[in-house]
Image (cartoon, rainbow, N blue to C red; front, side, top):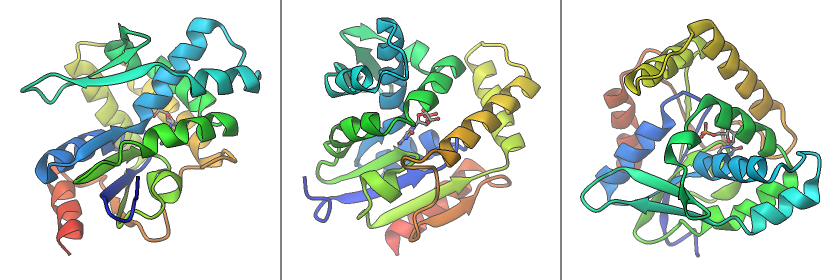
Length: 225
Ligand code: C5P
C-alpha cells in the first residue's frame, strides 16, 4: 500500500460523536472504501473474552490480535456491513456498550495496536478510503491528505447514543450512558499508546450544534478545497 497515491480521509473523534455516520456517507459520496477501525477493536475484544484471556497477559493478547479471523461483508445492493468473527456473525453484539467498554480496555495495550496496524492499513485501496477511529490521522494514516476531528459535548453525545439505542429497540438510561461515554473518553484520551487527540493538521469540527448534513457539508468542502 502506498498512502501517498491513495486518497485517504481520516475521521477521528470520541465515542458517540457521529463519526460512523459521517464516514459512511462520505464513503458513499466519494465512492471510496470504508474502514470502521472501532469494529476491529470491538471484534478483537470479543475474541479475547471468548478465550477467557486475562487482559494483563500481553503475549496471549498479541497472539489473538495477530491471528484474528475477521471478515467484513457488504450485502449486494445494501449499505449494511456484517462482521464475521471466526465465521460467526457478530454484527449485533459488536455494537453493544459492553463490547465498546471491553474494546476500550484492550485497545490501550501497545502490542495489540501494533498487531492490528497493518490489518487497518490494508484497507487503503484505490480509489480511496474513509477511515474512522481514534488514531487514523495521528498514527494509522498519519500521511493522509484529509483529516477531520469531530467533537461534541459529552451530554450531546450521550443523547445521540440514547436515541440510537432507542431506534434499535433497546432501553437506555441517560445518566448511565453519560457516565459510560465519559469513562470511555477518559480511558481513550489518557492512554499511553495512540491516545485520542486531533492530528496537528486536522480540521476540528464541533458538532454539538450541527446537523449531520452540516457536518457532511464541511467535510465535503475540505475534500473539494
Ligand atoms: O469507535 P468505537 O466506539 O467502535 O470504538 C470502540 C473502542 O475501540 C474505543 O473506545 C477505543 O478505545 C477503541 N478504538 C481505538 N482506536 C481506534 C478505534 C477504536 O483505540 N482507531
